[in-house]
Amino acid sequence: MSDEFTPEEIEEAARAARIYSPGFTREQFLSLVELEKHLQDSGYLESVRSLARLEREEGISYSEARDRYKEQLRQNQELEGRVAQRRADLETLEEKIAQEQQAYQRTKESREQTERELQAAQAELRKQQQELIILRGESKQEKQDIEEELAGCRERANVAKEDIAAACSLKEQLASRGFTLQLVLDISQEFAGHESARSELGKAIAEHGTLSKSHTALVAQNEVQQSLLVAAQTRVRSLEEARHQMEDTISQLRTNAAEEEELRRFYRRYQGVGVLMDYLASWDIVYFVRCNNAVAALASVFDRSAACARFWTNKPAARCPHCGLTMVSYDEQLYRAVNLPIGTPFKLQLGE
Image (cartoon, one colour):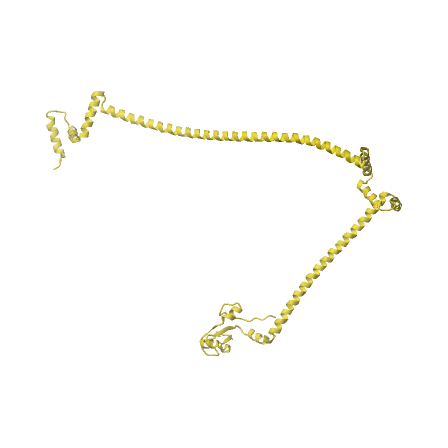
């Protein structure tokens, strides 16, 4: 049986209630029915009591409490959003602080490295300054030693400063006349080997007129000798090239002689079968065939002359002309010798 009221029953109950409360409506009756259902739930009753106590003690109605609750929820959400934003800002700030700390640490390490390098450079500079001071002292001492040694050499060579100045002046005078000091020394050395260098020099001057002309004649003679030498070297290179050409020609002649000898051996070896080759060349095609007679193959073990027959034919063979059996096949060895696939018709072509 159902506890639900029918529409007729609800209307009848509402009319009965109007007897005691003329303003009683059908919706109020449905509300009472719904309230009766909720009264069976202890939690609902507890909630109603709590709301009644809240309204009695605090003077706050349910709707106002609900609005405040919603407002509190909204504010709570806003606060949570602010807290989340503050946390994000805090994390960003912490990351920036960490980055700044890392940058500071790198800067600190770089500065320490720079200070160490500066200290090393200063130490190296002080070391070089000390070495420079020592080197200057050594240079002064070495300069004094060189001057003393030079003075000793002058004294031992009996050469004075005036002699050096005279030598320099002589060199300048020779240069102004188109001569070099080395040339004069070479001429002096040339005539120094003669018993009478003065007379030899006089002869050269008498022959050519002046020492300059004598020198010019010697230079011209030297150029002639140089040209003759160049011509001789050119002739030698020409002869060398001719020798190489002759060697190449001899090598080619030897190669030709070897080829001719090979041709002679080929002719002596195959001249007897020339007629047979001409005859085979007249065939349109040639097939290389062999017999596969098992008896003949077994007999060839004891007598090679009893081996299977091999024959050439201008048409595909159906049987062996020797034993008459049909056990014939193409001769694989001959086909491999002429570098053809087995069974391919062969055409013998002779050269001119």
